[in-house]
Image (cartoon, rainbow, N blue to C red; front, top):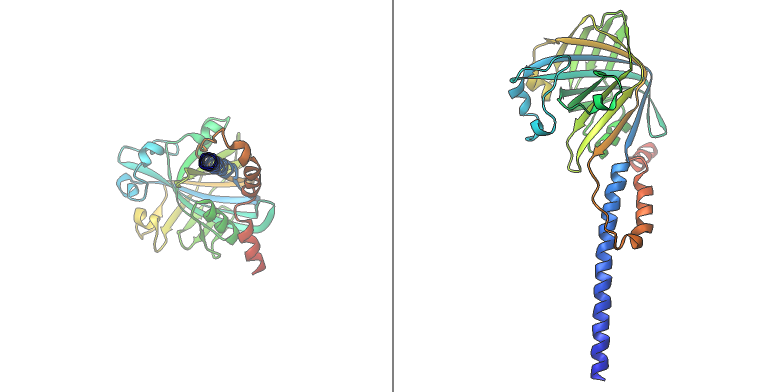
Length: 312
């Protein structure tokens, strides 16, 4: 009887160990599946309906910019330029606002929207490498983003790219003249003088932001755009934020003013990170779970939050 009991105990322990190992492999498989699903669950934001943008590019001291950037910025992004690479002690910043007649999040129409953003032009060439036309792309490290859309602000924040909600943002074009009230970030006035130039091949803009899961890229692909290269824009930094630290409180005439008109420019937010490996053993046991997980994570990032907001 004692031998039988011992044998049964050993068999039970062996089965328990197998179960624990299998459970651990299933958990590991689920983690890998979650990473893959998260990487595949890109956030899609649509911008259309006679979009108008106002851009200013200007040079600042690199030492002032470095205090606003990650410690490993040089290795991951580097300093690039718009038209010309800045000197070793300089950096180019980009100040942009855009107004579109219609925005959408997933399949949900949001109505008109105004966005403003500030960034550092980087040496990365992801946008240009993606584009068939040389020079038709730009990569920027995003310092700040503001929008009139509560849904877009919430969705971007949930994805890991910070966004500020400001329902008072405005961007008004009157002929060549432009007036921009981006209260938390900056104000801009001046003109984008014509004639408009149809830019061959369209334009791609990547805006980068660091995240624990990997670099988040916001890529806007504009198939057709008209640029206006003349005029002049004066920018005044907001009462706080990175632009105030870079430009000070006095109005600054930007070095490169740029106006643009486009009909459609969708944006895709994605995490540029390699997914973790999925163990072969235990993958079959986790397959049903991972399928449900993929389906769930493939839905828009903020669907539940948006529904709750709509109900409120």
